[in-house]
Length: 142
Ligand SMILES: [Zn+2]
Image 1 (tube, helix red, strand yellow):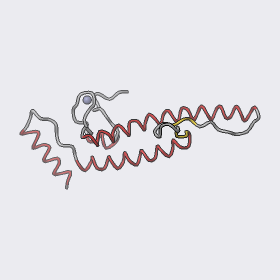
Image 2 (cartoon, helix red, strand yellow):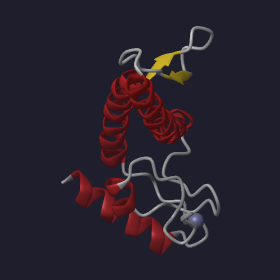
Image 3 (cartoon, protein in one colour):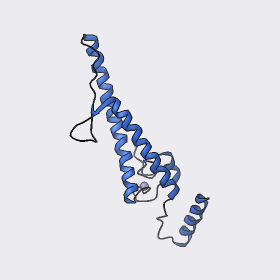
Image 4 (tube, protein in one colour):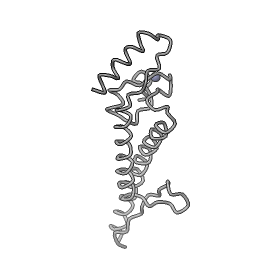
């Protein structure tokens, strides 16, 4: 129902106000995506704690964990391998976390759903599939 009203409202705006194509953000989608982003943030925090330890000086930064399997050469080799996995996992997770936090920040400051490159509205289908999306499909970085 809300979706139908939004759709009607948007098409009304579109037909009557061709200059302002800045359509009202679907509030239902916005609320849904905020919940999804918060959940993803919690999930990543949990995953990060497995491969990295929060660095004392900054709560938001993590240092890859160095495992301790034992003291033989085989143990040490295994530790180095695990450490390398932790480093790469930590980098991937931190990257994703940055995107999630940036999206939450855009919800806070009211710019969520707008393409960072061209400023146009990001398609709702895209935002549904990827709540952290910060560009439209045309401006998506690959
Ligand atoms: Zn764009």
